[in-house]
Amino acid sequence: MKIIVAPQSFKGSLSAKEASNIISQSVSEIFPEAEIVQIPIADGGDGTLETIIDATDGQLKTTNVTGPLNDNINAQWGLFEAADSKKTAIIEMARSSGLALLDPEKLNPYLATTYGTGELILEAINSGCNKIILGIGGSATNDCGVGLANALGIKFNDINGNEIIHDVKKFIDIALIDLSNINPKLKDIKFEVACDVTNKLCGKEGASYIYGPQKGASKNDIKILDKNLFHLGEIINNQLNIDVLNINGGGAAGGLGAGMVAFFNATLKPGVEIIFDSLNVEERIQKSDLIITGEGQFDISSTFNKAPTAIAKLGKKYNIPTIGISGSLGEGFEKLDEFGILSKTTLINKISSLEDNINNAKKLLKIASIEQLKAVKIGMNLWVHMTLQLLVAVQLVSAQY
Image (cartoon, rainbow, N blue to C red; front, side):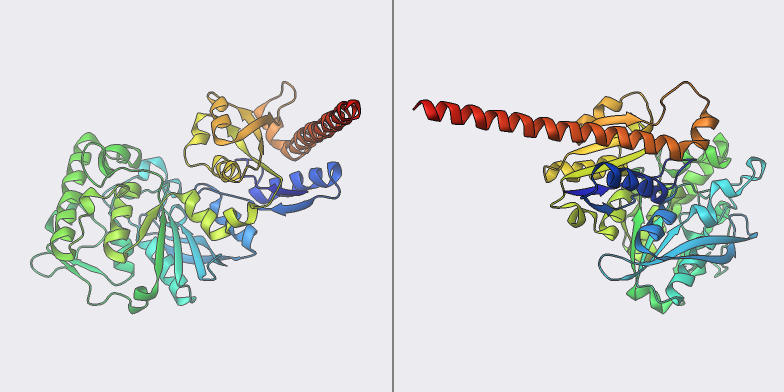
C-alpha cells in the first residue's frame, strides 16, 4: 500500500513539513507495512519558501537588500534543484518589498520600491541560478516593477535624459526605457511568476484601484497612480512592443506582474501550478493508493487554486481517493467533495480557545490523523468482508448447478 502524505502548512501553528511528519507517524502506526511518500505542499502564498526548501533539501539564504522605503533589511530566499534539474531560486517579494515590512503610518505607494526584490534576483543570478520562481503576493509597492528593473540595469529616463528612480509620481515623465546596461546574465534566466489574480494593470479593476488603498493610497492618489501606470504601459507598448495593459495578472503586486513580463519575458502562472511542477507532484502521486492532505481551514476559499484541492484533483484524475484534515471547517467546505476530498475531519475535538488549539496543534493533528486512518482501515476491512461474502455466495450458487 502506497500512501501520499501531502499537507499544506496549518497557518500559525504547523509548517507543512511538521504536519507531514506527524501524519506520516500516524500512517506507520495504523498501516505499518505501507510505503509513505511525503510531499509537503504550498500554493505560492505564506510559507511557500520554507515548504519548498524543506521538500527539496534546498538552502535557505539571507541577503541584505533595500527595503520598500529604501532602508536596509535582511531578506530570505531559497536555492534548490527543481524537477527539471535547473538550479532554481525561489524568491518571495514580500520578504524584501512587502506590506508587512512597514508600519501602517509609513505606507507610501509613490515611494515604495521593488528595488530590493531586484537585488535578491541579482544575488540568485550570481549564485548560478538559471531559473527563478518569484512569488508576488503581499506587496507594499505600486511601481510596476520599475525598482526591480533598476536593480538589474534597466533605466527609465525623462525627455532630457534624467533618470527617474523610486518615485511613481514622476512616472508620467518617463520617455525612454534604456536597456543598454541590463545585466547580460538575464538572457539565460527563465522566470516563472506565481500569480493568482487576473487584474489588469490599469482601470477600475487594476493595480491602483483594487490594491492601492491597502498600500496607503487616497482616492486622489489612486487616480494619479493609475494615470502614471497607464502612461508607463503605453511607453512599454511603443518601445518594447509588449501590450502590458491587457495582460491578465499584469496588475498583481502593484503592476509587478506586467513589469516582469515586459522586462524579463516572465511567465505568469498560478502559484500552485509552479510549485507542483517544481516538486514533480503529479508523477510522484501516480500508482499510489491514498492521498492525505490538509491545511488550517477548509472552506469555500480552499477551492481557489489552493494546494490541498489541487492535489486532490490530481488524485481524482488517477482514481486515487483523498482524505483531508484541517484545523476547522468553514462555510462552503462541502464544495471540496467536487474536487476529490471526500472525507474531512478537524483537529478541534472539544470546546477550547484558539490559543489552546494552536499550542496543542501537534497533539491534535496526531489524534485526528489516527482517527481518520482508523476509519480508512475499517472501510478496507469492510470491503474485504463483503468481497468474501460475495465469493461464498457465488460458490454456493455454482454448486447448485
